[in-house]
Image (tube, rainbow, N blue to C red; front, side, top):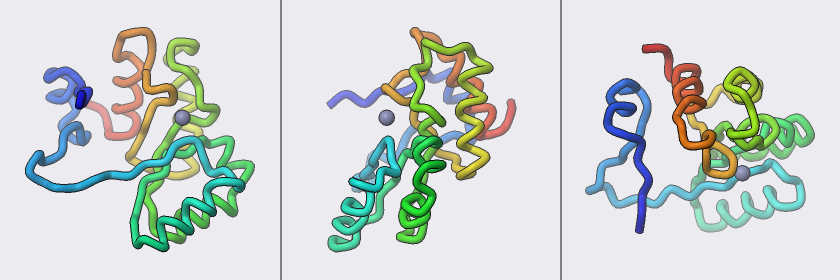
Length: 141
Ligand SMILES: [Zn+2]
């Protein structure tokens, strides 16, 4: 299994952010992306409740706007919420200010310290968006 890790220097610059977990801790973190979606999310919540499992939902802001009742269901069930940008944008298609604005829009809605870039990438190989978002959500250097 390959686990991607940010470079050492980046982790040193942002000590507040969680980049690694204790390798001796035996845990599985279950995550769901792109919701809330009325056709899927309640079904997922029902299954998680049946097996007494908590998960993290990385949500798209526009879906929260469209389906606030489904968003509230996830929160009321005690699951964690993470930021997945407002429009599920691809980092390399946007400038830093545009990407940050899109991400901050969701941060204002959910106030989460968790962020997952859509499509699994920040931009075309640099960590520029990553720097900005980490500073925004974890504080400045
Ligand atoms: Zn996604």
